[in-house]
Amino acid sequence: MDQNHPEHRHPERSHPKRSRLQNRRPDQGRPDHSQPERSQPDRDQPDHSQPDRSRVAPSRPVRRPRGRTAHPRTHLLSALGLVLVAIVILIVVLTPPDQESVDVHEREKTGDFDGWTPSYFEDFERDAPVGSFGAIYGTAWNGYNGIADTSGRGMYAPDQVLSAHDSMLDFYLHTVDGQHLVAAPLPNGYDGQTYGRFSLRFKADNIPGYKIAFMQWPESDSWNDGEIDWPEGELAGPMSPASAQVGTLRNGEMSFDTAHRVYSPTDATEWHVATTEWTPGSVKWFWDGELVGETAVAALVPTLPMRWTLQAETNLEEQLISDDTAGHILIDWVRAWTYTPGTAGN
Image: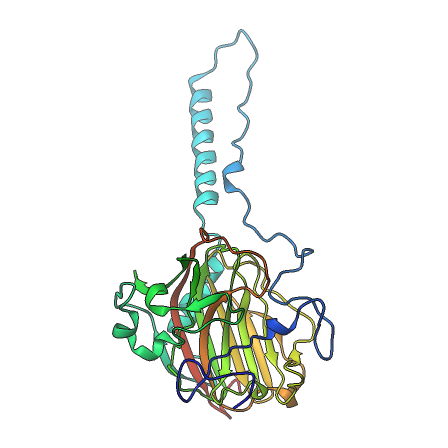
């Protein structure tokens, strides 16, 4: 077992204690390429916020000359014009900003894909109040429990964080008696698989001081066997993917692919579908069905079984996290497929 992953939560397993972001501080950089902290979006990133639909202005009324009485037909046409303007405004305002995500959601949730065989699926139809999630969905779903997160400032506490309601998994990130509470559930328990397709639909509040790192983590618990992250980022900005390159562990640090950061085109405050496709020599990451990035070095892509881990934690900066800060991450569904070599698409 890798010395960088001490066993805390289970007599035979450790958790992904060390996230790749821990080793990307500005004063350290990466082994092969200097980079700033991955979890923080660049300040030069464009603003992807939704336009303010409420500012759509109605058409200006037609002014008529003084001293003339308008014909009844004029009043009728003016009224019809105002009605049409109102309808247009309603359509603009009520059109969901994430319609593309909705379409991808239906395709990912219900569709089959060439080259992939469905392996497991969860849509959280069973309600589970806080404190009962593990009992209803299986204790393996709880993931890490009673140990510190990567930064050491948060505590994995699924019984105080996780619940299911309205067909959604709910992470309630908050603080109790000065302790920041987080969770890292495992959709398929501790069982890993080699290669696969992993997709989920989620959204998150802007929660300053917290981040997510949804990942494929080695079943061996050895970081040197690799790591695949997507989506990952602060809960106040866009997401960024990466894959830890196999066998590159040096002085407690790993090299990552992609060498240059790429980002999702939006943040996670609306519903989005994030998908990872892991095949021999390749990892691809998708946001609402659109390719965001892919690995470049085939020989260093992970090859051993990994388990899906939905890790929510405190961020890796030393900034103060207010005890009043709280918010939710909601997951509509999770779905996984096994890789089927030689079939269409693979």
